[in-house]
Image (cartoon, rainbow, N blue to C red):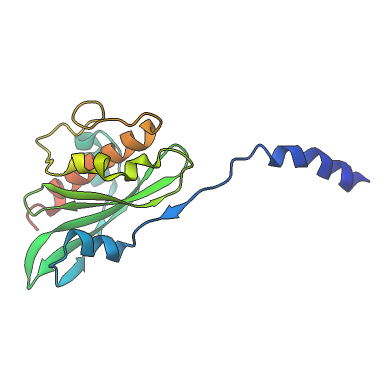
Length: 180
């Protein structure tokens, strides 16, 4: 009887929980090939960052570097640097958005791809029309939502956090990879 009462009390609460949603669109390898189709190799150049470096990134980018390491690969063709590809996570509203950023050797955004999206709303950040507005941007640009990056109604948090992430990764490129 006690179990039946407990089950009866918990059953309505389970209906209030939103279902989890997750979609994987590209693997790291697929994104690498998409951004750098002529690359002969991708050299793992993951950065291990100490607290001082993470503080420096936050000061410059205006957003913190959550992890002690940053996944990044150098795209090469016969030893020539074609650019860099970062893989990063930012929080959407509640869940992580995994995205890739390709940067030229000169620090210009070559593209942004959403690899995995785990939110129930805001997936419009995956639309090419929104992502393409980053192409060609450098640290000379503001790279701020509502300034030089447009918002998508209903996806504001996803838009803001991906935008902030792109700016943060460009600062990491400038600080630690620009002359590598």
